[in-house]
Image (cartoon, rainbow, N blue to C red; front, side, top):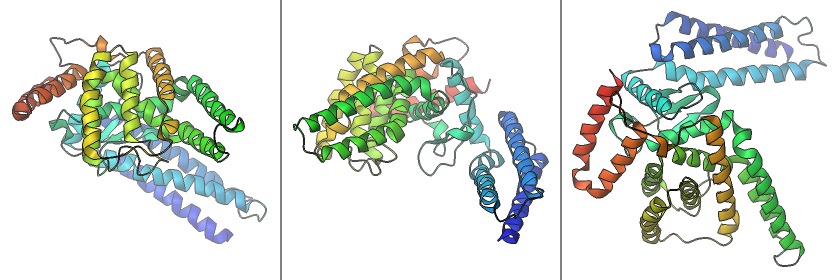
Length: 374
């Protein structure tokens, strides 16, 4: 086995060198030059670790072989992630990616985004998604030519922000969550709920503490950034991609879409936009009725309004603490187009006159591109 592992380590070293040479041999656009420097530095660090492993005099010692195998696995997995995410983004970078980068850069300035602008790609096959560990966002092809879906860019920025400031966004809320779970278990102990509800509460605690808080918080951050435009974009996305708004296709990755809309409403209320909530909720309720989707048993125990309100308050305070600029604090300027304002104007124009919206959008997109490319 030691010979097999030694061969794998040598092969991984060669692969690492090949990737380094690829990045050294290409001329990259200014958008990604700093990013390429960082990835090259990461590859150099990985290569040093590979050399330390392969040159270790104790390599192959039976007692140490399990640890050496685990170290190889760690390095191989990291290499796999680099090949799967940063490398395709930067080696295939094109003009459409550049336009999205310029848009995101302008948005980041306007909202006072406290992190480096992500590298963007326009070859997504799964709508919007982000790879937070590598500061990457992927969006649909030609997304820079449209406005109504762009609030979802703010959701992905929210994921990256949450990743880097998770404690600020979640620590106090998790205390509220624990109290909610313990209160539910006391209901079981008191005989007011069947004994089977104890594992139920353990299950929803794990989901909230794991994937759900990340999605809810990212929805709330996006709402903080662009206000009601994100709520409308979320409703549009549900109409296209949600089979059942009360039952997520995979609850271990996303909460139910209906609960996410209530999370958005909770943040809008915290920001003082109650009128917007009432306006959107009227159409949202009609949409729910049209779907025919029915709320399953114990749904509101899993997605309780007090939990959503608690998280909205904590996310709101964390956004302020990070210096993020709220949508109500945005202003138009003479030298650039304010993107949060534009996205809200786009949804207003669409809802007011859907027949003429396409022309309105084309005109605003042209103006935006001209502004970004000055």
